[in-house]
Length: 248
Image (cartoon, one colour):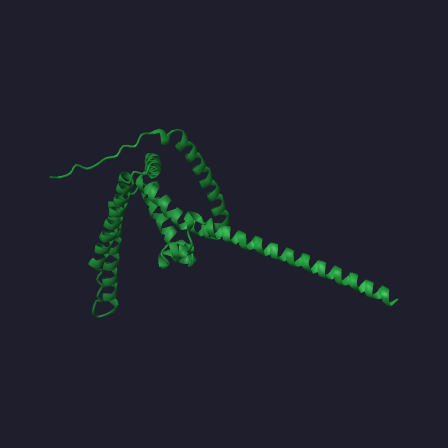
């Protein structure tokens, strides 16, 4: 009897140790798969980014509006842009007409305010003056000038850099913009870009893993096609070396 008991105990101990090792190996392999997937997901972010979307958009109030942190403000901004687009595009109002109507309504409101307050009070109430600070126009002009100069400098760097791939991408992007501009006017293009800026970042933040994996597959396919084009056609184009003349 004692020999049977010891043998059974030994067998039970062996089975328990084997099962513990198998479970540990499964747990380790599962943990390694999770870590590897997280590492690959980290390195396969869109355009190799390592910072969150909110930080890439500036991290301030504008990023909060674009990512719908405050739904009331984001919805009101989008509704305001939609109302402007409807007035100018669907109802065919002109900018001068809207400005004149707004000035007329403002003048009538101030006129009735002064006269009605004068009937109830001995002295008419003073209407507050609407004064726009000059810093607003200076900041707008500085921002627009800086962005235009940056865009022109980028196009010039691409044109003079000697990289054919970047040049082809820039030419294709400008061609697509020209085609879109032939379909609709500038206001519609700006409105489409405004709506895209208020919808695409929030959707990407919610489904960034799926979007990153899909776009990485697309980019890999495009790179493979470009390598085929480069090896078959682009590499055979002779590249000239331009040397500037020495000034005496």
